[in-house]
Length: 163
Image (spheres, one colour):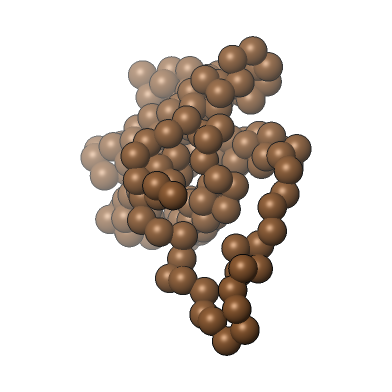
């Protein structure tokens, strides 16, 4: 059953990345597919999933998350580039405390690139920790904690603060 879910999720991610019709919907569908896969891997890791199931799940999540981020980054590469956030600061003025707190959920196509990049990098960093943990035989609780960091980043990636 778990392999069927992984295969279906991988299909959704690849189909989303390749489809040109309904681009905004496809971008959101790709994000949702990675979220579902993350939840499945968390359940296997925190539950009674075998080491092999966890390994396969993490490999599938690695592939899906990286493909999703790459596809979204390529789409965003064609968007016009604005000035850096700190370009409007006066001399001696410090930049704010980040980008703000997550707001209402939006279509991924409406999310500012700097917000997307922040949360995509958080998810990828946590994924690296999960992969290192699986390869190093880390405790399942530690792996689950890092998987929850991925889940949290994916939940906030399309919730930029209101401007």
